[in-house]
Image (spheres, rainbow, N blue to C red):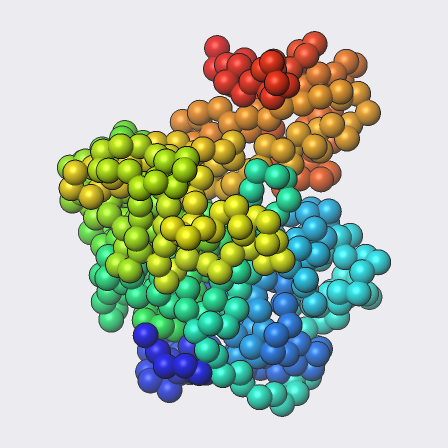
Length: 500
């Protein structure tokens, strides 16, 4: 663990190993050493400072995985600003809600997200800046802003480093309050489990508004290793990147890995180059694990949460192949217990709620003491997931205790989708569930009480307010929703409508 206070991690890395390769843009092959990236980040930080961003401010970043986004991640840390990554696929309505939840003071967008950012923040006091040439006069050009001098922030491990959004059961976004110490403990424990080599090159193809993508960017500075950055996932492109850039590790969700194995069929370099495939975001099927075993793909199935700065438990390839379905043992420093509804700790082999504690676990939800009290208790973080630990301590995750849907590695709150559906003038009621799907893990499905409207109409209605992964893939219509005697929607009955 580093001392406290401390400069930002990249400035330390530039001092320690300035000539080490830090970042590679997958498409162009352009490379930055630690010193070169440090200089670029200093300029970005100066430009942000000229716009008034400083220590304690909440910097919203709505951007795809690009080199400019990496610069913003480290520039926020250099200034002492709290990073608030916002999904680049969100609508204006969703961006506004996220900005209000996290008290964003300045938002930086790109050409792809400028329209949604302006739509969402119009009428607010939050200024919008763009890393690309702005299309609207209301947006400030960051690249055209002359940098001003600033004092580099000195960090303590208890300082708030980022607010990352996670879906809950209420339909309102919750901003997870993650401190520098949480990310540092996560990086340390992950290195213990996955191993670390000086020549490691980690391919990042996950969005940087997710913990799984963001932590790999942070770790290039902590570990002194390199990141190969892709703007989007393309299976054939990833296979080529592994060979072209000597990639040794990659973070994927199961859908991505399945496609990757298809694209890499008959490509020996893919099998030989990688030493770690970190697989998370959704449960991995036994069939997928068997495909990895047959191809000698070094898969590390992981169970993690934003509230724990990514990984909680991770299986080694040997564990994954010998015990398909397990997510291995908790990472170093993490205590993972199984508890009943009263919070009593259960013995090995008995299923209950998984509860995590340790230095990676967040302080709570920003500005939401009620949600914090509900999820964070004396025993630790109540994950909302049911599971158990076997006699040898391996962790098995059975199902979620709440109704969240995980589709393609993205969390979707059914209540949020149902609320948008009910805004349509023809819809009287709606229930949204996740239905098992071989490709996506789950697909979003909606049972709707309505007349005179089609699935096409409702899908178009949803697209105006929801990110595309939240839009239902299928609809069914009913005269009334199935409900229990107490009035609660019978979700199994709703789900059954789509499983026949």
